[in-house]
Amino acid sequence: MKEKLVAVLLASCVALTACSAGGSTQPVPDTSLQTDVVSLQDSGNGQAGSSLPRTVTVNSRESVHVEPDIAEIVYSISTQAAQAADCQQQNSQEVDQLSSLLKEMGVAEASIQTTDYYMNPRYEWVNDVRRLAGYEACTTLTVSDIPMEEAGTILAESVKAGVNHIQSISYLSSRYDEAYRDALALAVSAAAAKAQSMADAAGYSLGQISYMQETSSYSQARYQDNALMARKLTDTGEQDSITILPGELEIVAQVIVEYCLEGGLDENSGH
Image (cartoon, rainbow, N blue to C red):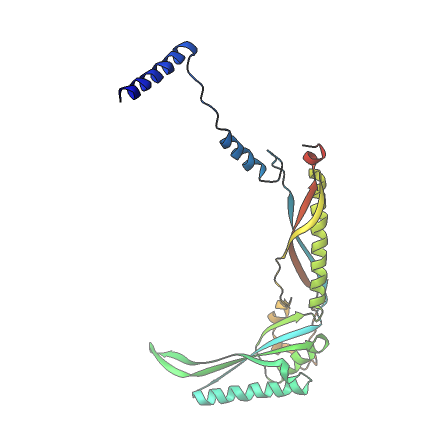
């Protein structure tokens, strides 16, 4: 026990002697910790200390214009009666009459669809007392795939037959799918041109596509004729057709494209 205590005291004296002779001792650097830091710096893109991007991402939006060749008409047929059963029966008769007229004019039965129906009570106020005045029924009839050259005649004949409420008139194109693919191709080409310009400016070569996404929604493009809807269709008189000017449809495609970047200033200089 005494021998161990003497050894400890001698070691302490040696340490104190070294401090008084040569000043404070310097700690030994932990080289393993420095190695970890360097490896973290190199783990990004293979170039220590480099912050240059190795990819470039661009957004692109392009469109094509087509002339509509299909019309869609939404009729709203409303009837009123004192009794609910009578109101419903009258409404059904008027819907059947319009449907028969459309079929006689060449509209396919598959193109005529009931898209909404409701029947509500009507009230009136008499001496501050609310009383039931009757019922109102309304059927929404959507007629689609109407050739554009026939839309004006169908509208005029519908008004002559007693239809007094047309909810909407929309114009579409049977070439939508083809035109949308054309717009997509234009958007991808435009993205490539933008990415090339950015790569050139940064001193890189444009590599392969690493990511590409379609961000536009694929839905039938349509144009609603608000100007025609604002007209009083009951004023058409004995006209055989209503003039329709559908204009053009804009079909839009949007994409996000990411390209790899090759070369660069650091690689070319050997660093």
